[in-house]
Image (cartoon, rainbow, N blue to C red; front, side, top):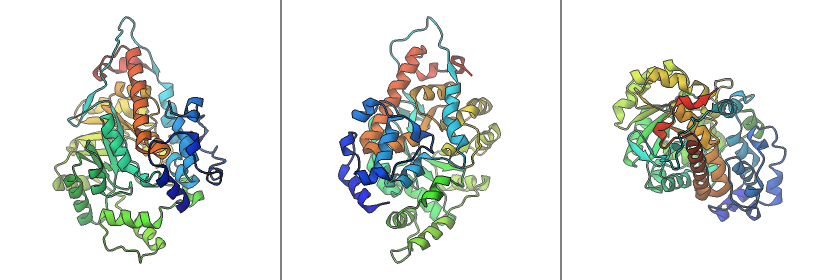
Amino acid sequence: MDRRFFSQLLAFGAGLFTTTQIAAKDDAADNENRADTPEANTPVSSAASSGLPVTVSDFVGQAAARLPRASFDYVTTGSEDEVTLRDNVEAFRRIRVLPPLLHGVNQTDLSTTVLGQKISMPVLLAPVAALRMLHPEGVMASARAATRAGTICAASSSALNSVEEIGRSSAGPKWFQVYVPRKRDVAAKLVARAEAAGFKAIVVTVDLGERKDADLRNRFTVPKDMLLKHLRDVGFSHLTDRNSHEELNAFNAAAWDISLNVDFFRWLRGVTKLPILLKGVLSPDAAQQAVDLGLNGIIVSNHGGRRLDGMPASIDVLHEVAQAVDGKIEILMDGGVRRGGDAMKALAYGAKAVLIGRPQAWALAAGGEAGVKRVLDILRDELTNAMIASGCATVDDVNASLLRV
């Protein structure tokens, strides 16, 4: 990351939205010609241009204006031809809502429980890597925003803050998403540290491997100081400043287990008493595996279209997965949620809640903690409106009878 730009971010702080606080012209020039990504084409409303964002899409332009191109593209783009990235969003648009007549309500209760934790609304913050490259406070700002919104922050072990830093950042409930070190002793200590830091669940992402054209073109890389801190925070304490950036990148590329199988989850159950969620489920068979392993929850997800291009949209497989599971395990979903109405459609198809990744990242880049809180408030308001318009007083009233494809 450009050091001068990072210094500007440090000076900006959280909660800044107006155009007078956008980076200088030479930084903005780095963000030109971004029409090659689906989300970058999203128009910014006049309301957002003059001040407070009113939709998730309003944050996209603000994030683009504040971030170096490589960082913006890292968050925003998808794998290869971005078929799955686009379909995640478009699949929600194909689903129509047909509310019942004479079933009006004038207020709603959005609260629900996930893994026994009561939250104010069925929208959680998804684990997103490298958040500290988007804002100096990174995932710690996200965690504080989630606490203020009364929901859960699922923090990535690759967010570039230590598990202890994230744990101390807020009093609200947090989950820890772990990328698994090949060295099982390092992995075991990391999970134990998450438990000691007060995290309430462990999320394991299993759809691994990534090839993104934009990252290759931009030669995206985590700055040396951040990468070194990250690796040492995970538990690779033998690494030092004497290691070159190239050495650290090579070590990082080989440090993680990308071939997880059922034996790993049996091992994980033996080293923690925390609830375990499997992230990356897209089929009834995979969901049944999670049930058979005695896991506590699954997240229907294609990793936001960042992994294997051509995978189905999360919302397109959610109902089938939920029917197969039949209440034996809690189901969440991420991928493509851009409106509160999208969250309602996911609830109708059997999800307990949804998680937001890119909306969180854009909002964080645009305004730090205040930005993330704002995007959660927007989704809350939109979901409230959708439920009132659909005659649903509580989230339990939302069901598949409301939907038409």
